Image (cartoon, rainbow, N blue to C red; front, side, top):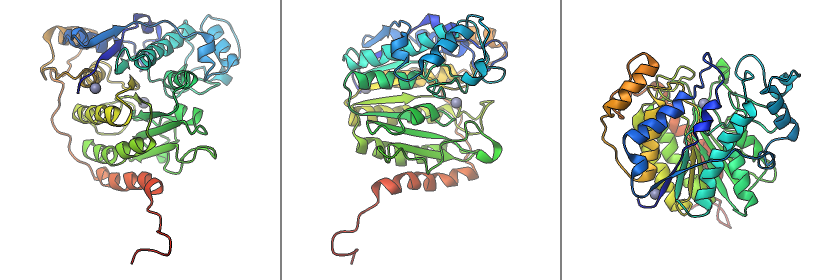
Length: 388
Ligand SMILES: [Zn+2]
Ligand SMILES: [Zn+2]
């Protein structure tokens, strides 16, 4: 498919760093930009590099409260306060230096992607640093300070975009955008994720009965998959449900959160995907952007905690699809050396992986997709009775 693709490069986003003992390492994004560059994808004639500025407070306030933004700024500058009520403290969301500035540049990078797409400078744009989909209007959550996908969506709505579809493939439920646009019929949120409340899997929401608020029925769609689901089940549910629901909604823009913590080796979750599923998902989303959203596709990164072995390969696969190029499967030697130096361990040498073994959990996929589809596309009985 043709069209131009933009890659947002915001080196300042490396300050989004919770510290060495935290799983969300900035290296995951830096190694992604590095692998894309090593393949030369960012220098393809129809690919542009986009810069970014930090989002200002007024833009952040499209989603977040002033009180939360001020707390984030103060806490990140060493000021004492009762920051726990804003989600900050030991655990998932430790206070780190320049938190506000870090969150603002990540949000600004997603805004740069949205701006370039709205202006028609590019058809598709990708902010690998973004996808912080757990942040809520008044508190940080799940490693996320400011909810950059929701901010980009709110910003586009404020500029007159009428309908936006948000598709979230992170292993965790996309609870932030769902909650923020819960009662807004202009935004469809679709999330496919691991769902295991019995083991307390984060964040615990995203069950099939969550379907949107009273003013926006059916504006939220959830595809909750059991632990162990592999490529086969994940792709079955994704293919069956996501394209028809998004097409039916008819968005002006498709926004995607491309977390890759669904990988079988991810330390924080329990799905069994390989990078082969990412290639398939990328292709389905690309086709969907053109079919259903006039080609307008704003993509962010997201979770993914195999920061050297998986994340850069996953997001290179997605960006290559956006750029319409097919990089060689063999990963360039120079990148492997740098990644192995940083990891102090071995990294895979190809983008693809051996096929995933199917799992008994895959058998649930059909029912999960049917449940999501059923209430939307239930055939209405024709006037005068049912079928003959
Ligand atoms: Zn395209
Ligand atoms: Zn995640």
